[in-house]
Length: 388
Ligand code: KIV
Ligand code: ZN
Image (spheres, helix red, strand yellow):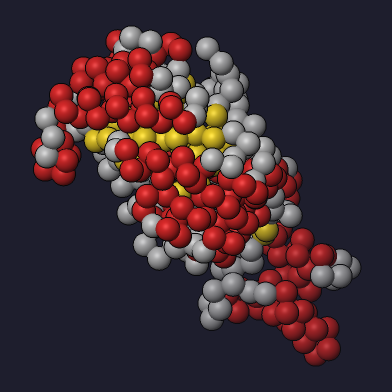
């Protein structure tokens, strides 16, 4: 089995489905260019049947962006597949991603189709897509609430019709790592022809387990991860690209060296671009790309960091695109961090007594102010130097 993980980014499709995240074509193009430069293998550029604007954005990206496969989403019907082809047609390498729901609740209430009709629609959709492109992905929407043997049946039909990637979405963020890994193993052992295609995973974060579920599925043999920058997406969002990529880098030993080809130093710039473009703010404590991901406030942590950064950091900030870590001065900071900051500000020759007095004033200030800035510190020191 290959140890290369295909990164399929759906920021421009599932990510754009976050409430309020709509992007105009020039903005989508800028994001797509960034994704391609980062080394994303497949860019899901949109859902052309959804609107003329979506079709136009997909077409523009397909024409302009090189180096990544450009993919468009289509429901399992002729019109959607034809629209997807219209969008991706100019691409260097193009993929059609077609899907249909397979869970009892979706088949009965949403599609109003029998399981046999769903299987036939999948066969027809994949066959039609293969008439346009050789790279076709088939997804069983709501796979994690579907019958496992029915999934094996529909995937076998999709593979027979020419699908080259089969995707197992956790559409409503319902599964758990252990269960998802078991499902992937079951599908790999019981679906005829599965050894000839890429198994893909697509997770939502409704229970906060999207990244954990994705990683568990990769361990079970999936070799494509569907992700978004900053984890934006429907409801609670999708799996975060940056989290999966850095977990695989940081825990190479644990994941057996399965690697994506992403330029990790571009993770923070990409996060900023997507946040700016969509208007969705990144929470400060977000892993990897949040403003506090490499900020240390507690005295014990700052002291450790000043002695050896490995004490409290499992990856370097530079490896993901930050300039450096930050020792934040606040009420939990100790003398070590305080003294180090004074040195950085040019006050390296203060006596032990002076530092003690300044530290006391600084702690007083933290009772009134959440974080203390360099300007606050300079004011404290200057006042002390002038008035003693
Ligand atoms: O969550 C989902 O099931 C999807 C499919 C269209 C792949 O986004
Ligand atoms: Zn999704």
